[in-house]
Length: 442
Image 1 (tube, rainbow, N blue to C red):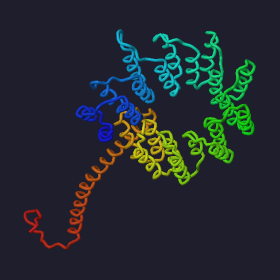
Image 2: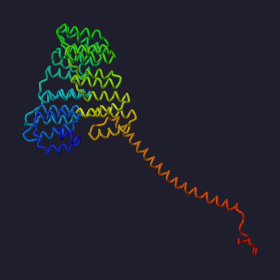
Image 3: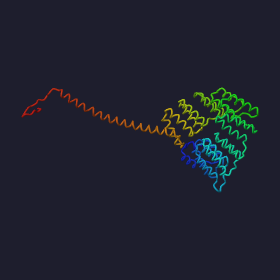
Image 4: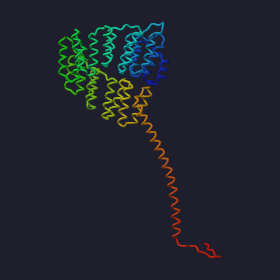
């Protein structure tokens, strides 16, 4: 890690230093390093490639999955697929590809809302000769976040005579719950009871979330009690399903009551719990107070936490706090990713901090993060305008210098004219002599 920290984003220098080192590579070391640099795909990939070439070591399934997950998160899908091809072992070697490998890709595609490629990846199960059963469909349903695609998979299950069990219902109901379709959630809940499918915790969580989102707080709390009566204990996800929509609806007291009840049950709040409360804070003092409380309870801020707070402070025009958080990220080992840079640059640019925005834009490109097209266009236009203005200023200064020189010349000529005028006013000191019909000065 010292080599990686010292070389920063200089991948050439890092590779050179690694090759000169005597580091003994192991599976545990590779997984640990990839975990620490997961927000910098280039550093992670450079280390991964170097480690794979070391004598006495070969990447296992765990290391491949870690690297594929990092690449997918940074939208480097082509590079991720090249690793999957490598895992295939060619025509003769053993294949390391498992259904879990493809599921990582499916989830990463879903995370960027590329549902088409997610479903195409699901169909790639056939290419790798994997059986497609209820577990595979449930995994796909769990990854999908849009009701339309979930319905498509639901119908495909029916065509293949794959039964809709409690997990399938929970996945689809979760999709509708996130889409604020309470009516569809309740219809599916009634349907599953008619089919004799007993609801589990995930089903109840989806309904509680949908009810709270629709501002039916009383009904959501009552369902939580019903859940307990049936012997299903609420978990952190249950309380998060309640707290997040309550915070969004500005029902602060109810959200805090749910938070306190969760602590009384011995449940530890997650990063999602704190994010719900961060969104409703109104000043910097409250933000840093909650950050401190969060750390004391063993929950460390993530990239998403910093992105949310940097955006909030940018809206409040509190740039001292923006840079305080930005520096804190690095100190706490959270490497700014592409999204972090985009949010920071946007905040600076839209508040007139153009030079600072451009500085971080250059830094972002040096790390080879792909700029967001709108930011790219705005900053390039600003740079062009700035260069044009600087050229105009330079031309203006040159013109002023020339005008000054010309002015000096012009100021000399009036003196001559004035002298001539004075000469005409002066009394004659010479005599005119007439001779041979002509007049001469003496």
